[in-house]
Length: 196
Image (cartoon, rainbow, N blue to C red):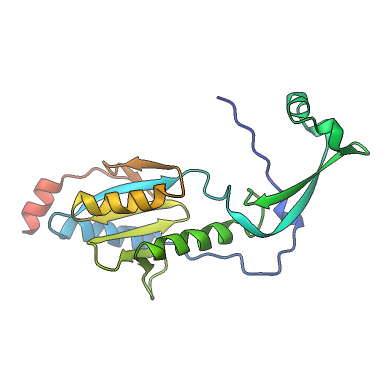
């Protein structure tokens, strides 16, 4: 029930490379919603990758030190940290993405892109954050680790789901009740009937 996470003080790290990642805008989210409303048989769902930054391999490790007094005793005991303490500090090697590291988002996004590309998904050339499959009737807005998905035929959304689940734990909202901070209520029958 209780969860503890370490956050690295990214404000003290100078990372020499690029750390920005393209993401969908609120305007793009609204355009996707309009597309769903006007496209016959289109539906909306959303997926969210859990712990997106965590677990992404880093190109090179980082090192942090934590004062022994700042570590809960149960952690010290469970991981035998006294054996690793030096002058009241414990040193850690960070080998996977971690909150607070400037490059974590970029590394996680690059790996996600590679995995999506290998499954036939690609980002639109001129629209950051808009993704499509090379032949499936599916497109989605990607906001960091949140997918707002327009699809025609559930099997196409299930393909994206299985692609993501090969590598990530995800949560699913097949009713599409909320995305990008927008509460959504869909009435496909009346909308598509009115536009047919």
